[in-house]
Length: 124
Image (cartoon, rainbow, N blue to C red; front, side, top):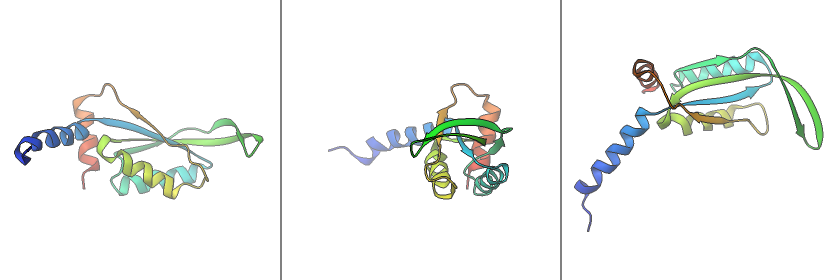
């Protein structure tokens, strides 16, 4: 039988690993105001350390069988791997689109100081 003492180091190591990783989560919004509102709320809720909104971009896509060409804004947020699922759920629940673009990418290289700031900014 495996004891808790045997398993604890494994759980602890995984928890530390989640805190030590940072990710970038992005989504597109139809207006700058909606992107700002989502970014501000995510920062206030400590789901992300920061939110950046791009200049308008042009998106070309097919929806309900029709071709669309629309102006959108990219909301980019940095958070920890531990907060990633909560941030993605927040976007999905609050997004104005029926199907929100939610893309998460691991950060393969990051300065220790910046990672520390992300961790501090997203701790409850």
